[in-house]
Image (cartoon, rainbow, N blue to C red; front, side, top):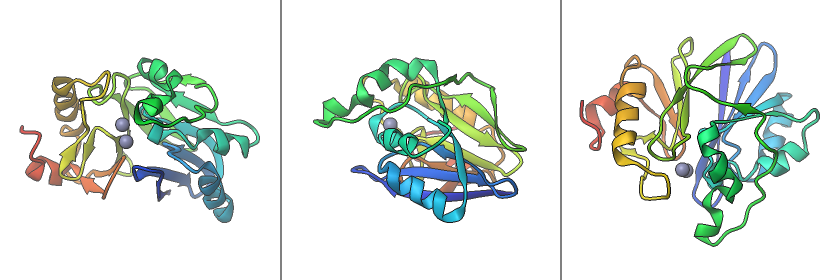
Length: 211
Ligand SMILES: [Zn+2]
Ligand SMILES: [Zn+2]
């Protein structure tokens, strides 16, 4: 079974998801947003073993906790990012643009590609490349559990901003229509900020995207 522990972290209230295969205790952190020691403590408290970090995209508020988190892990985790966000990560995810400095942490060890399958024990996730908010933005879809981790592509009642470097409004809307709205209505969406939602709810009510 897949268990999901959301943590709201950092200066812009980013959702970090600690997810585990409860049969094996293997865990993944989707977007180690901030406060690596908090993420680590949550996992240790539950006896979950973090082996992988999956990034939806390389804005600083989604991986600024990676350095401290990885510092507390042995062996070192797999770090997965789409190569089109590699440069953004090197630039501290745009943190200096907001007057901040972050440690970008461990280099990515896996280049994510569209339709790649990621595994958490026997639970499979499909990578979907969804450019628009950033060029290398991806979402993680688990069909078996009917769950989508959508990063900053789509939120409850809103969508990701496209006014930062690399943003592209048309690409964002296309990504939502082709990679999110084609999923079953009952798919739960866990996004990068705010409350969770579902594909059906957003198809009906999201004011930014029309079918
Ligand atoms: Zn972002
Ligand atoms: Zn964000």
